[in-house]
Image (tube, rainbow, N blue to C red; front, side, top):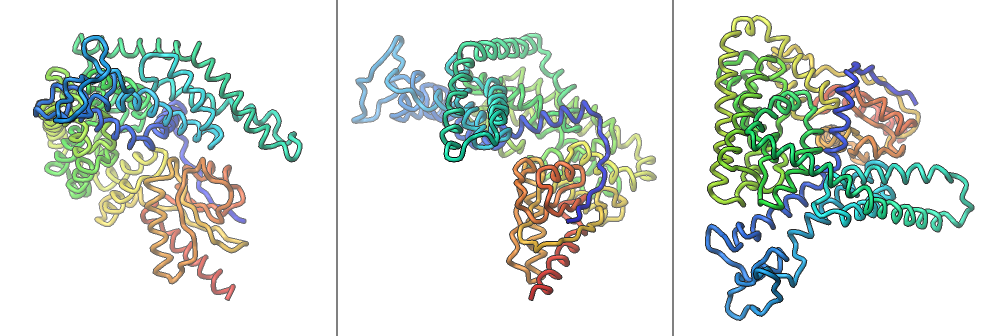
Length: 547
């Protein structure tokens, strides 16, 4: 089979390394966000300051609160008629009869989910199982939620399992495969769990303590807003995931467990700076940037897709200073007034932020909203000044600048995004972006075997590849072709069974390595690639020749 690809532009090695680390960390956290949200809502409802807790701002008490939160419950809350009041009590009246959901979920469920996901990313189901066993040793060897431990021990245990299996790959006598595989994984898991309990857990506890002390130091000296100097430029360059998921999320969970909320969840997720930037481009921008900014603002603020504002910042790099100022203003507001979120807001939508903030009470919600508004206003004002000062130059150069900025954003991300692709298509349709980002490579692949399975592959196997698969399915359906299986998945999960693999050009070489016998088609725009027509025609010709 003939494959086609286009040489991807080389990127800075350090930046690519940080991006890959961030992508991997994000791959551990994001598939489990639903579990974080579930835990956050349970916490919001039943901790002492929650809706049904002892200090409920609404005066609502629900009988099984003590059972749900376990050791943190107070039997005095169980005051419904007929409710059991003679409960086992410990010192201070704390209810001790149940383990409870809140503590069990944050101590065991969430770290084990992360470990299992990380293990699967490294070595499939087998890696996930050993990673989970090993992380259990880390968890019980410490006295705090072990998210950092899970994010390190999980992939490490899976990698060790992979190396162990290589030792006897192809050397096991037929009939003994299951015996060797099960016992080797079980024994290795036991060893790693014991090592995690006695050695790894205490080390991770020390690291968590140091990181937590650093954050407390920044808060005490009121220096936490300075973190925006790193976070906001890192977001535009897609380097933020390593900071957000590697530091803010695990430390934020620890803080939320103790205090019911954490300011760390809102440092990166605050939609205010992006909203302010896009509103400024709406009123003071030029050409395609001005025309597309209102729609981008809606997607960013309500949909939580922050990456859609990155091209606007890159088209006018000085506006990154406005983002830093806006982000710092939002952090300052939350720091001074005590605002925070009960669980990670993912995506960073105002809807997700509201859901994560409301558990802290009305005042906390007001403070969080205020931090979003102040961040947006500060960013808007500074960006407006920058845009007004360079308006004449922008009118002359905008045709190339915005399209190039979209292309640069996608290059920084290292993979295609349906939202950026739509933005590029919109700009190209207006004739102002020059089509820079929407250009696609020609598909010259030919097939020597029938095409039945087409796979769209990207880093995460969600988002952009899912949209591309949907577009091609619709094109095949319109062409009267309905017996072709079009799916999407992560490149890491390609198993060589796909007849044709479609990737964006920067990922094609990786896809070839995972599925070398497939046809590979490189595109530059998952949403609107001309290669799709060629793929449809290729499949149609095969159908006609086979009839």
